[in-house]
Image (cartoon, rainbow, N blue to C red; front, side, top):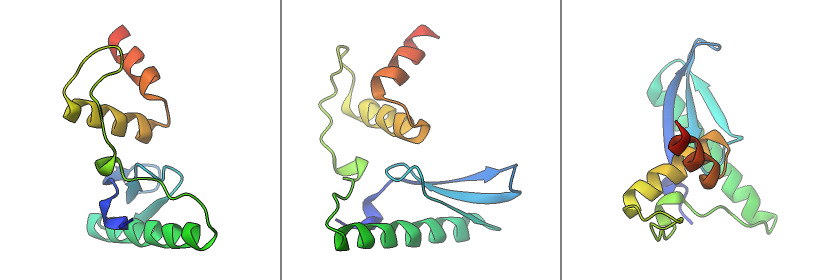
Length: 107
């Protein structure tokens, strides 16, 4: 599994006063830096190290969201790209896809 295939995002953290690099498949990992580029590079290195450590320990490594098969079905048919986007949002928020969809439908 290539760590470059994971879903990365950089955002501004007002609490820290820095950019934060995030990875949807590893929600417990983040990297703070003064620039967006440095935040992205930092979190990518951190994820690569985590994957290496997990492999060495014989642990199951998360499958990148982009490599998962999305049927586009969860009681409501939607395009696979929308399914993937919702799955990413749910992963980033640390909730199930069902909970995210329920909240969006109720809004």
